[in-house]
Length: 469
Image 1 (tube, rainbow, N blue to C red):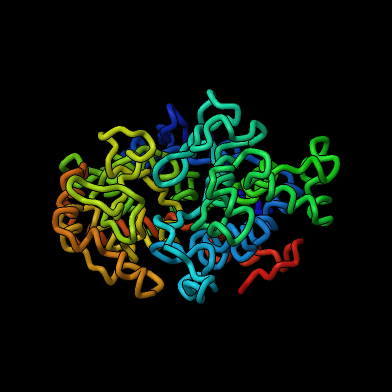
Image 2 (cartoon, rainbow, N blue to C red):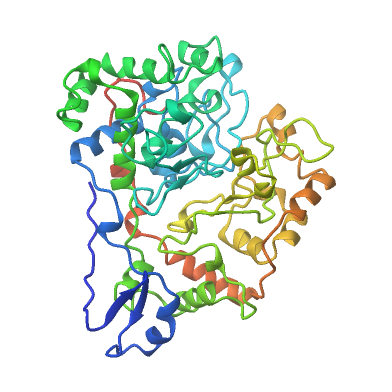
């Protein structure tokens, strides 16, 4: 478990009102008095969920154990790895059937090769143990909602178990049900067969089969008993919801990242950020002088409003089944609209948090941009960036039949026009030097403890399966 040192601010120098930090009259930092009204309050331990070391250790092992995949050939950690900053370094993941890790991963061999790329970028997992994160996935299809027994509104509806502890645990229930991500294809294994007929929560369904696998491993049984005392008394008590809770605990505790230069600045260390980073911070929050600012959407302590916006993001990959008027084949991705059914949500995606953003390229729901500069410049003039998209930015594992699908949307002027027509991001009046300073600020959002996550990787897993191909 990692422990974060929190700098306690003197009450004589700082006060918090309505979630915003204000410098008191006694502060010697004049620029704090000018700028503090638009900065978020610093986060503290109270902003994060905590967990027992036993539950975290269990989750650490489950995160990297391929026992949770249909063909026992991929783990949750394959696409959210410690060596790739809780992502995979690719624009679009190579899921079940692939071989290797990160940008060196292959699409597999022969009959075992992947059938398609995972259609959306693998998002980083930093800080998702914070109470502020109530909506997950690029399209928000998992969100906190007390009307459901699980406490979450999800594609499983009322079938989601009621003993899930938080929204991140709810999220962890779903990658194992995806044929492309972890389950495999019909005919390959019984979990894939259950997925193919929609049997996720029922008898013999995906979650029950995965629980039975864990129940059959004595080392896991002891770990579950230690992690859930009074709830798991013997092997038969283990459910996949317990596994999801443990994975959530590991991600929440070990991948918390709130000790960046920016955090230390907010907590009172005014020398924590460089002069250029402070200039970038002002540009980020105050805007371009024309009423536009990055913080309009990237607001709050984690630089996200947790809402959904259409910003003319290039669409790469085979898509997620959407079609603009006059088109077929499902090569597009309408994002939030696929969840709500509301045409007003077409092409809107969740605003990502910017914590550790310098570590988590590629960027965008389809991983279209591979550098911080490119994604910042896209935000400054999104429609122009869309029309002039450099396809070499995409980080994709090449295979001829997959490559043929990757740029169907971007090679079709009509489809590109459709994306542009839904854009809601106004051009911003930043010049090249402003971009430099904003990037300096974005780098100041990196927690040094997140740079080397090797200690978060177990040396072995209880199933005995190999952790690397």
